[in-house]
Length: 225
Ligand code: TMP
Image (tube, rainbow, N blue to C red; front, side, top):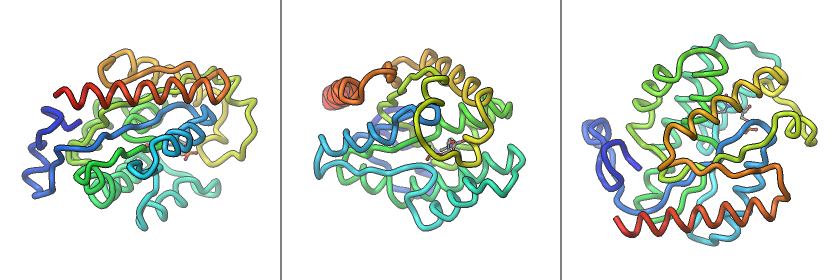
């Protein structure tokens, strides 16, 4: 969805001469660390087949992958503003070079994290403010927003118990993840038309069935527009 309507062109996008989109479906997966997003993104793309394009944030472009390495490096420390701007810079590249062209071709873009991660982690948990972080991201993405955002809701303690290696942000511990979970709860409640909350404290195949149903419903309502 673009600001101002699904098939429209955001003012920023038009001013910048970027190609708006009229087709495709943009699906994002959100949740705290170890909520199962990556597994669910893979299962969804397998179910969708060739029409799906799987991407992850930060990353997905040459510049974005370099920025990802910086952001995940446990030997570095960042101020919250620099951190937010680096995420937005990687996202700007991804939107312009990968997401918009794929949507224009009519593909289903499945993105593991997007702007809402910045709203939850940097806006809320880091205390930068959701409105300010939303504004810099609206500029960076030239107004691109998902058609559907799937929130994989897990209890932070259950997510902590799942296996995995800690990156720089995960290493900060339970309080950050709990703040991020509260932020996602609020974001999902504030925009029920775009968000679909799915209980992810369940077996992966049960969660997958709900994810597929949500994507099919979004596709049907997009087709009806
Ligand atoms: P992941 O690829 O394992 O999800 O790691 C990305 C980490 O970066 C994760 O801890 C969430 C964090 N993150 C933000 O803080 N802000 C963002 O905008 C994004 C995309 C990720």
